View 1: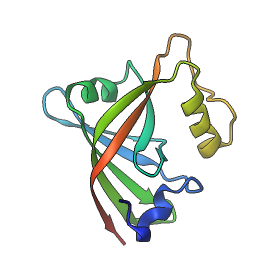
View 2: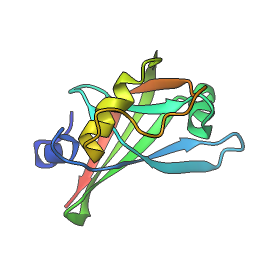
View 3: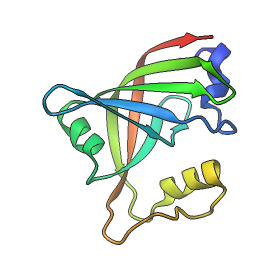
View 4: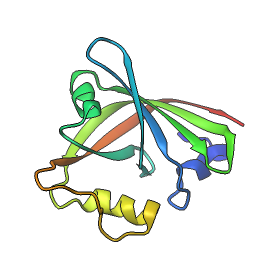
Length: 131
């Protein structure tokens, strides 16, 4: 579903951030950058259950990502989709894999005692690109 012209933006080797937009409790947009992984059919990213994005997605599963080319900010894709699954990540395996990709660390260094980490799996429904 990702166009070949922009497949490099979601490739494992590319350290693009995804700016995630969710819908807040009053209908307002909430956006922030996240590390992500494209598994060929879903965009996966990690959250703790205490985050606003987690609460927003519990209420409304619609989500949008803007993924910009780190070498050319005028080239990007927008991926709209729906949260289809939430996987528990008690051993922080997923976020540690993301830490390896983005910062070269084997283990996620900012984990705090009591954090309840989950992996959010989003199925794209619409994709558009620019550049």
